[in-house]
Length: 319
Image (cartoon, rainbow, N blue to C red; front, side, top):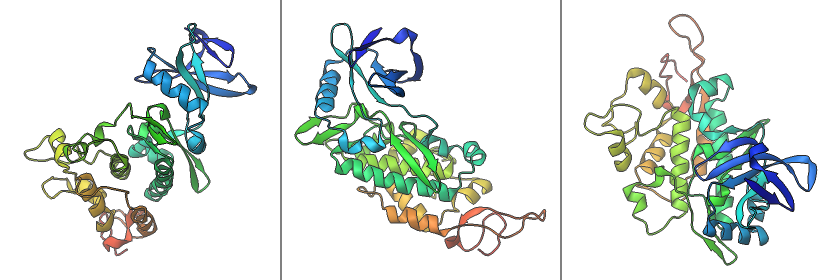
């Protein structure tokens, strides 16, 4: 397919494909205005008049200006041979990882990403999501795979992807969200008349819980009468007393302390909505410590745990 960006034509068949999504393909190109910089080019699988209109308006009015620093927001429109908008250019991310990776135990072990580091990541992500909402945007498709991060010393560089699907209500420009993450499609949340910030915060809490547990909170453990889908619909996480856990699972899943567990449990049950309390994340991070006790084999325990629980669930030492 031939597409044009700023008067420069590209044949997608000869470009390096670097991504594949539900709506289109992503390629690596040289910036038509700066030969020393590379960009990403997203080309939709099908021409969509509504999406084309949204991109044209938002790019021309620079609607994404306030969120560009922490997102791969569209920069320029890409057109086909009929001069129809079929895609856009965006910042190319290199050396980044997916927030979804932090829910993988093996990945965290290999990259020395501790619970404290996970908490710091989500505290910073909380700031960015707050700014996204303040700028007049809703993510909708809030999932770990759409959020990239790169370590920057003790901090993180965090970047949202797939910004073109976000809902917009900014300076008279209004567009609906074209993608909604399945985790928000639950009875207690989907009963609201329209997508709102509470849906993004619910998905934020869901990803935070998964990144701590290294498992989906609605599928971990065994429920004697409910399937995982039924648990998700009713908001029953692994911390619910009706869910059965092995001793090893209990050791890992209850080491975060009651204060954080309680807020995650009620949040994911839909009992509380609104802005997730960032201070709980910060307090949790401050409470984390590595147990200085010993295991039965004489080795240091070194289990990362909240000091609010009193005793290490791994070696029973006083914290």
